[in-house]
Image (cartoon, rainbow over all chains, first blue to last red; front, side, top):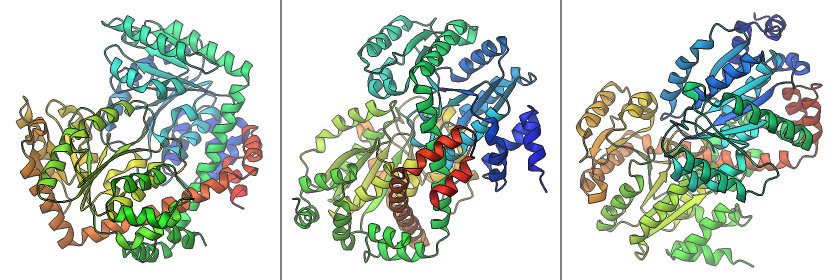
Length: 306
Length: 306
């Protein structure tokens, strides 16, 4: 029998194994989560959530590692959540990430965790906010959420984060051009990593031109970095702090967090409904009839919900 | 006032503009869809659905175009649905696809359509099966569904298709290695495209070794192609037909299609529930309380569903 109250209390005091255990409960969609979340609720709401995203190869994990060093240097407690959307084509990269993050493994001011939710009904839309809640209650002042790529509905990093960093690298300009609209909507800070490479200046220029056309209230900052050599860390932390200040002054922080909690409640409610629907024996009978062409899928859905 | 019955009848007789109009209704989540799907239901269930997926740059649209030519050469009516998961990073590629497919634009035995569903609540999990239903009722004997990348929960190509083609290209061996498990689960046929390039043989060998280890009943075929020069088309069509024959003999076809219809009914039901939840004024009040730490998200979800 698991002592949830004790586990939660130890996680709250920052014991790494208790924190890891609670995130595993989230990953496994454990029935104990209900009790865990009830116990954590009064201790949440303090962490700042920063999302990092970008195409494979731009240096997301190196940049994450650089940010962890910079934030630890300021004495802030940091959480890192590497979110794996369970893509067969990206699974390998994350394994690499895990290894590269090992230099912080012995620093007890840093929690590092990668998380997958392959197969779980609610997916990462369900799991990620709850994992953030665990790290938040464990006293992380900043949580970095690293995702592979952007734009997937289930792992909408912009919906989860207070501040979204979009990483690009020189020589990947085509995708920047192609993606103008999409990127501009979600990026709060652009990081041009590998800025010592040829083409870095023109990448920065392209981004400046894009940002100049944006109609959002916040004009995304553009920060060149060479994360592998720790160059640009201070500028990046400054850009993040500036965005944080704007979030607070403009009321946008409250708006984003409210939207995040709405999504979280909705994901839990929908997952619970979905489990009920899947377990409903009528679904098979209805599917048989639709497959035979004697029923349309809308009427079938109505009958399922009736 | 739209005459749905007339539109459906014209689509059934294969009028391209009527087919296009019906797919637009799906894309827009139009309220008329209920009536449309009811009218289409008796005319569906004949089309064979073939999914094509693979990393950017492997030649998905060239391969799709090659397959369209080969299938048209056999006199089969073909539908092509290019599914855009609305990723800011992939939006651009599809534009290119559309252009490249134009050589079939005047052939009335081919319907070509790209589809996005950015912003719609149910997303592509909701829209894609309904678009397939339209093409099926319009008499397409084969429907090719092309997606960017694999593994995204919302666009689970393997869940939609009778046969899933996974495209790889020489020199992208790292991702194959990294992704072994995931790819093997979903690939029914591997296409090694750009097989005239250096490294093609070792890519084929790597895949053979992977396939040899697989425990599935169906051992995926491996077909080298140079789609840009139309090389390998006959072998590919043969591999597809062989898989189709296996699907029918083994009973797997029925199993896959039943699972697909279950998912379709569920997606429609969940989307309808989701709309109700979003419109529920209590969600804001509950989110306020969770944000303040006075309520946990599970209890909030319970209250929302109560």
